Image (cartoon, rainbow, N blue to C red; front, side, top):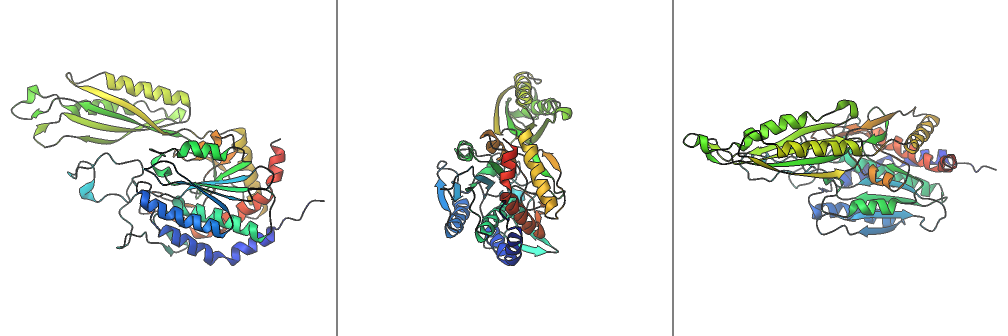
Length: 424
């Protein structure tokens, strides 16, 4: 005889605790947690660890090295049989955009900024340094409200709802990184994520949900091509002929690099940062270029790397030479029969609950879904709170989606035996 599933209890529990969910959301958003500030990120981690312990979860704070905040693991029902359901995510946020005087090339003496800079985000913090959370017209605003503290709140309340309903059928594991926004540079997080995810039945990666309600089944990998062009500095008037202009050489390389883009293959090559020159009347002796690359396959990654290397090795301005290196910050998350099957399962659950069907999408941004998939776990991504404009001052999340997604994922967890049976 099939056990009666407590769908109604799940729905009622989430509805009864909407104010509590928003209060937790607000608290997490107003606890700053930049991935480039270990001390700040650890404040968020400690608060989350406290929440999980209060819920009765088994908490482990994994050290990932001296630079970044730790990887937080929380397990409910570790002693249970069966493969665990995994919720993935990250608790770090991007830094606010630097003030105009500190932008590259402004004379502020800044290094090339890291990958977690917002595209156009000014400082959205209050005077005391905390991020401001507010709700207007059904939308929540604040640094990290969408990417991805809303997704963390959903995962927490999925477990709370399952606990309240008396569900104890399999373990539930949460893995939250503290350095995802910087691509886990200077840490062992990526290796730990893959190892700790191994053996899970499925993974729901709680990244930004799409406004279209589509489920992400693939993401491009990404890496930076870094060129340092060396020329010969000289006075632009008196010694023009003895100078070797590194900026002019860089301009040639920027155009050639961009031409490596192949949209038909899902590959983009985008020069994004150029830094060169010291004074307006001097021929620059050095210029640095950062080239963002996105790709869907290892073959395309190799093509890009080799193409950039050849561009670096061949000078257009005689007397210049260029150093080159390539730094991959995350590999591709690829669409497979497993990802499609899990996306279809979740869409069917959504229809059954009255939320409507959910399509599939393939995204250009990277996420830790690639590491969960590398562990052999069927994974879908972008199932967190829905919204737009990550990493910018316009970041917002749809409040009602916080409750809808908690209901959907809690009820889907109730039915995971059916998905597991379908996977053989």
